[in-house]
Length: 255
Length: 255
DNA sequence: CCGTGTGAAATATTTCACAGCC
DNA sequence: GGCTGTGAAATATTTCACACGG
Image 1 (cartoon, rainbow over the protein chains, first blue to last red):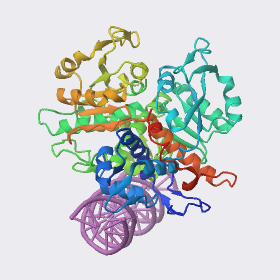
Image 2: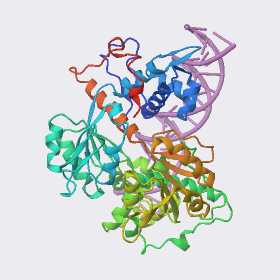
Image 3: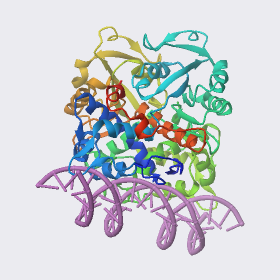
Image 4: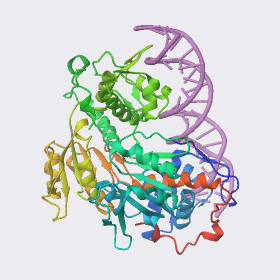
């Protein structure tokens, strides 16, 4: 997706292993470590070994140690890691020690689910805008009592982003309009986008797009499920000659 | 996540490169290729080169060709790929040529969004159950006019799965109950699980779990966003001495 | 010619295994 | 003695570049 990342030279913290690229694979696991560390804090655990933490995160201890070694030497040999201190170091590496503004486009079921999601605010993400085109939902108030968000018209997008409030855009719209929404977000200055629409977004190289695609995940599961069944003799699959009908295919693939 | 996969020896199709492991990285991209091919069919395109298809999928043409080479030789040198034929081959590899039953646990906002998702049925996934514990939502009818689903009580889980209708389970519940739901799904025979709850599920080795985690994706974006800002001198970050307060940390991490 | 299919090279990631430090 | 941090080895994945076939 994106290239491994070189830490800026000007960082001051002597504790940190400066000028080292942190692998993407590691970055993708840090949020898990961070979440589990938070749970350990709540359980009153103050120290944890790589073996224990790795177990709770579903990774090998060697992988965990290697991942953490990219951030610096935050453990104590013979003892383990201080849970709170390690959580803080990971949070800082991920940028969770500063607030991020998120604008969500699309207030359908998915948009509602996102607004309802706890663990947003606690990690420094604030929903600074929730947009939709549908007159019926505009003006609706969502969210928990403390953190209410009201649905605003799409026209407010530029104002919200240009006001410097939103660094991250979330696309929770139908696929048909996702590229348009993406273009408007980028034009307004958003450089980080999380896309839930099942389309490949076209963006310039300086924009980071991550995508979450339900259908993709299900299909990966289906592949493995099929494999499991392949080992069972009763199962059988169509061969080309039997099953490939070039005429009937096609339109059926898309929704 | 899971190990690369060895195709079962008994496959008959002479056209296929038998007994080859297909890399996980390739499997993860096949659904994208499949979806874009479907769009090409709808556009009336009948042949496509690796360069064109790769562009539409956001990958390099070399990667696309290598990926497809794991399935077999389905292109024509000097010409490209037959769109419909390639779509079918990918569909078969992914297991989309057979129907899959999906049981969704949790009929909150996310469950609603999943039921509303088109592109479910068109890829052979049928929602055979939608479960919730909340008395208010049980009995509710959701989904499009043709494909209606009504919310059933959690107690129906075993009946649905043991009836052989559900091969895939989707967990769209609050984090607190996700492990319990997972255990019940597995006990009833489900071996493929898609988890939307922000917890690391503990399962035995024969169960495939994939997870979709909004917070993780946002944090990865935040990391890259922070990096971008690191290159701008005005920005600065707390050093350990200034910002790490072991007392105030902790409980704040979790939702 | 043109574009696929693929060995070989280059990268990236994971795993091993143990030296080093508390 | 125990557990971290890390070089080195093993795997996995991507990229290169070109032989080959239509």
